[in-house]
Length: 133
Figure 1 (cartoon, rainbow, N blue to C red):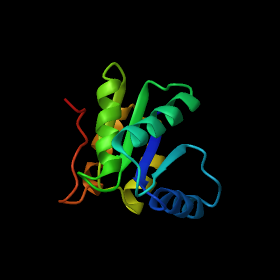
Figure 2: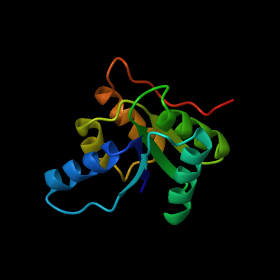
Figure 3: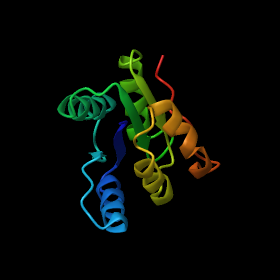
Figure 4: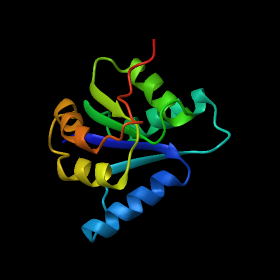
């Protein structure tokens, strides 16, 4: 199963998680939420992602979904991906309710296949998150 890390400006991540729980009619533990506060630095935000990844048992398949390309959450996701090039870890920006629900529906796929499945949910202003550097 692919771990899903949601990295958004607070409180968007928790709100998207709540909508997904409502849609599925139950609490969904398969999403880890990193709500990044408005005054977080890139280093702090990257550390939040790392901490959540460790708490989840350091999964090898990870999809990081971020809200806005070029903002601290997506930049932190990029920085985190660059630290873990040995993983099958992928990232996308422009997370939305449809993207989140589809990600949960196909969470049993490897990360690269899951990101391919999510491609039709990506808005024109969205983009893959590439590792920094």
